[in-house]
Image 1 (tube, rainbow, N blue to C red):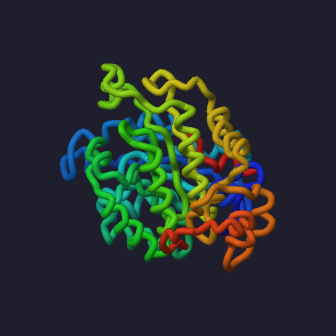
Image 2: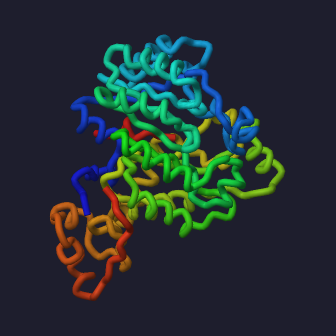
Image 3: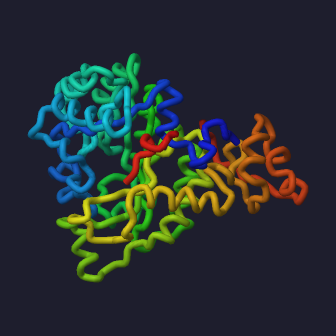
Length: 366
């Protein structure tokens, strides 16, 4: 069990802390709209896109395809320098599928982003089924000298939910994409949503167990929420489904975090949308209130990210050791006796979990 990267106050391995450790300064991600589309919209995989998708709901005002990448970058950098005192930046190609274009276009856009001053690298949001070898080879070429993170939208590992949301790809395609990205030495981020109709907490937690055995470097989690103009919003307005409550979401995410290895950085813990676009759920919480409702629940439990794991194995019995005890005594080797002595003496067993190596947490690393 590794606690080396768990923030002693946030109780998770926040991405902001990871960036500071890795680069030695405050780093922010700057959103850029590269004018991409999606194979789930143009007919090659499907039409209409995912039932929850409206990119305008989570994109900054300054990130629009009618503004040049250079202007978008300048605007975003100025904002983060003023708001956070950021010194270096990662350019985030976020909207739609940012590897879904001829490699010549990708090389031009990525190159222009990397040419900006104080840019450390790029983060590229994409789909598991839209990663051609040419795009991956280009990213690997860039990754030999710059930071590159490939953000893969999985959303759910449940096949029926993937069909329900009109996602257009399978779990198998995600697993293959993770393998191909990791083999090229690139960072892997996985996007997940919690709160689908019919989804149980137990089924959501299986995703944490899955990620524990994959070469995934970071995750983004957010609640299923409906924004105006989407098919999901229409379903909510017609009373066809009930979205998850705040209490249910916080409890489920904390359970998830307890099962997720500490080596995995947390980039996001919930999603937000402009109030004039949000249909449901309406929890009435500001960003920092939402963030700390999760952190405070971990504190109330006396738990932290990965606390149910020992040497990347899932702990079957309940916890008895506190956070500080385990943080101070974490050692390599057989951790069960040292980290959970009460459980070991009571005969607690550990089940192997396979091989393993909103609000972006880059803003909360202090």
